[in-house]
Image 1: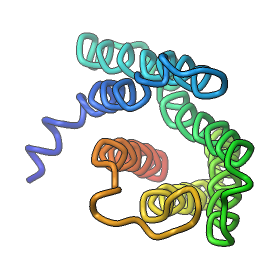
Image 2: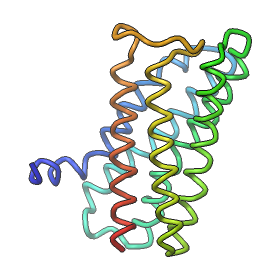
Image 3: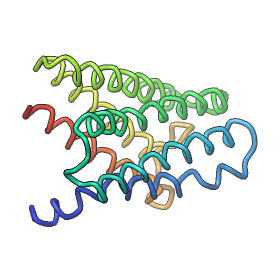
Image 4: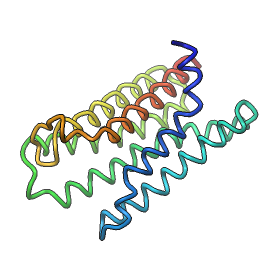
Length: 188
């Protein structure tokens, strides 16, 4: 099992970038906020694709400083994007949202911002407490992502037919990237 994990690990960013790109590609034919989200998603997914390709091509020859910058950006970009995405969802759908949605969306926005802030702080301040807080808010962010899969924008529970498989894969791969990064940081 460890061999499979070691074999797939260099490709996670590349896989994440491809799935993230495909998830929001149709937004480029939309209008307004959906079009803007599509453009930002394509740019961010291109970053993940480039980092994945560079990681595979350069491997251990990648300069340490560049590797650290890519590591931070790879964990921070997606939650920042999701904050903006959830904020726009609330602005667009506020009249349709039920009480459950009004709990889930602010939780998602708060968790994404707190995770970003504490993760960046933990990368520069080597304090075990800050690293644990980054891990805690990372876990809360992943939980918030799961709740957006289990409940729709109105707050109604999802059925198997309404759960997006690609969305589930994107969130799962990001969770692996996040927890790998946090585990590496904790060991340092």
